[in-house]
Image 1 (cartoon, rainbow, N blue to C red):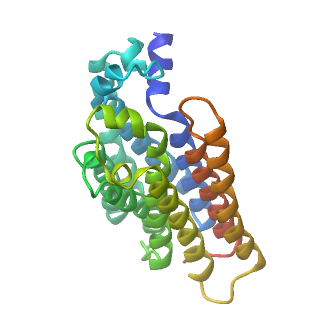
Image 2 (cartoon, rainbow, N blue to C red; image 1 turned 90 degrees about the vertical axis):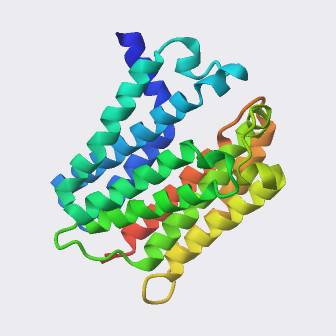
Length: 276
């Protein structure tokens, strides 16, 4: 049983799942949610992340086995496919149920983000519009957090746009370590069509655009903290990609750089005053 539980944790893509959940909780606190509201947001986002991560490993099980991915619990036998399918279904159903604590509009937005991410796993991953689900799902995250506030206020357009840009950048960075394996198994999303150099440039530009949107979107002149965040959005990915090139084998350094930029952006947002 302990091996199965550990396998389920590993199959959930725990690092990005934890990072996105923490980011959502920080954002919820920053926009004025109560403690109960922050917990409800965090549980909803965690359930969504679990559903997406588990479904990804379930759908890609044959591909991962074909390229010898020993870091995937399904391919090593730690978790059986039926157990992973059941876990995915439970987590997916939990998302709208948990999100209803913030009202029907928030639940609809959270469900949209989940469905979009699941559509990436199949069939959009191998299409030229593979970036679209990332943009939609990331954009839906702050929209859900704001809509879950009492009275369901409309989320600012600049906030949704910044999150969508961040998600699009995350897509290009996330795929970089898997380009060779994906090519062997027939995956041809937008990053694969642009190639490694094009994907790095796309990721860097989108991350920078996301941070600029957060700095210039709110009313008033940009702060020194905001300008520092823009500088960090330039420097952190560059350092991350350099470190990734120096690492042997597959490296998630580029995607971790995205998570660092996302955390910087959320801290900037939370400390700059109320969003709504």
